[in-house]
Image 1 (tube, rainbow, N blue to C red):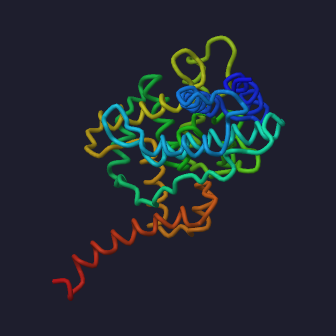
Image 2: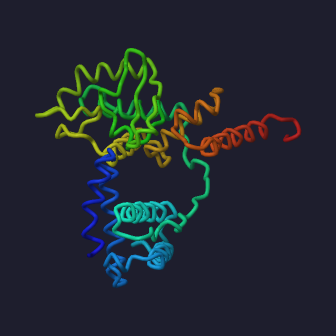
Image 3: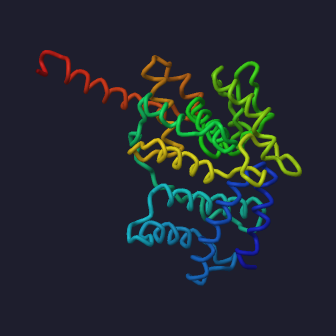
Length: 305
């Protein structure tokens, strides 16, 4: 039996576990890459899928070049290897394999980097004002950007956010990770709750055509807007606002966390809001505020004059 023939069973398994459509799409893409490698190595049959083959795939990823001639990022390598490992683990659990060939494969460790771009409060205001709230698209885009900055959720989490997940009366949103044990509740400010309520009553109904998918942010066809669509909204508004920085959806997540930390938010509470498994991931924002403190010290301390 060829390994490729078992992909549909794995995809059905992920859907049973409640994985999001975006996760399913990325998994298909990464598994197709894995299958192409197996075919190039003449190892496409299940009995040929060994630990040695998995090691060769890891090495191939490490030295593969992009179209621009640069090496794949560690992030891309880790995602593809993680997908392959999840697939081989499933094959072992379903008794297609005697042992898991990917079990001992270690993912490349990505260095903890400081956020490259943080917006100032004034730049955030400019980003908001770039949305023409006199139009349906402008109001919808403003809601998307407001929520990203207000809650620090990821673009995939916003794409998956449903109207039923919002408690606007009390100011909360249920963020579903696709893994039930990692769902979390985040606060939503009164300002954003009010804007969202107006959007739900007067704007969102114009996007719905046919069956309502239930998602908060809809595309022009009335379906769920995918994460790339939300990314494009932010990029377009940043351009209209004439912000020179490279603004992305994750920029708003970084900016929210940094601004809250500067205003005295406890690190543990920030960790819970961001959905970080480890406090180490959240602590990176303290280094951002320390850099700001260094600039203030250099400007005002007598010994620096």
